[in-house]
Length: 388
Ligand SMILES: C[S@@+](CC[C@H](N)C(=O)[O-])C[C@H]1O[C@@H](n2cnc3c(N)ncnc32)[C@H](O)[C@@H]1O
Image (cartoon, rainbow, N blue to C red; front, side, top):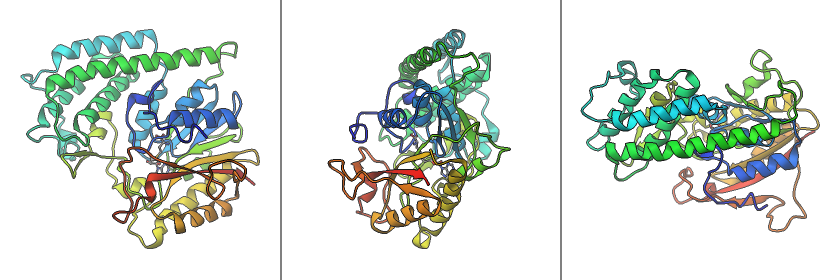
């Protein structure tokens, strides 16, 4: 219960690698995984987002897998769950040091013409944002000095984090000099997190056979595609499906940063070297303007029938969900889960529950409901189900 109401900033291990929208609190993921699973069990997050579940599963010695149809989520989750060797860290640190003298505006980088022509630099070449854009161009052009893709992706993630800090939802944008300074601060923080995670995983691996790996599998798939053995074949049914799906009727910007108020940029994809090209509704189970959220509930049904099919009678489904209009959306959401053979477990005896469920207020919510003034989406409910 304490972990449900945990409002401390998302940090520790590699959690601060990127501020993925609508993330779990790591302590909620940690407690849930420890309560519902044992060492070596499989934990699956079908809508993994920034990979909070996977990082926590890893440090607890659980095998884990995550899927997401957002390439950015897959990129971030892989960067957060990779094991970095001392050699990797030295190379990354050397790159960061070099960048301190390299990222200067009198340089002329080769412009990434392909990305520009496809609009990935939209809204980041304004009067106050162009120094950040140019610093990023110089930095990305120098990535080939790193020996392997793992190191390059760590640095891309560092650039992503620092560019998000510099551009997203800010009134004033920092100078190129401040960007460099922040890059250094973020690099120290990320390296410390990566080393800590490695230490935890090494501790937990101790004594287990070499081939026993807790490195999560992060797949770029829609959750309903997990059903196909050609995509992934489970060695046994997952013991726990721990997740936050897209929220009914709630608008979350998973794939854009907001520059100068309402302007949006797809620049995160250019920085992470992955493709977007899909509108917001692609990442939220459909457009919230559809009557009765029909596409949302159709997509939900499709994904949860697949989750039901890969589970067995020992599989738990634990979710945090928010609704723009809980009064009609929650009953429909629960009905679909029941149709997919998930049976709800209510916490009838627990203190402070309303309707047998735990509700929590979400701090600093950046998304909003479909009707102005409605605040329901700033509350999340914990739903616990068992595959029947
Ligand atoms: C609320 S976020 C998950 C956040 C995550 N719990 C974390 O801690 O970062 C929901 C995610 O679902 C993903 N998503 C939406 N539709 C999907 C689908 N059909 N299959 C897989 N992922 C999907 C979105 O891209 C988004 O990353």
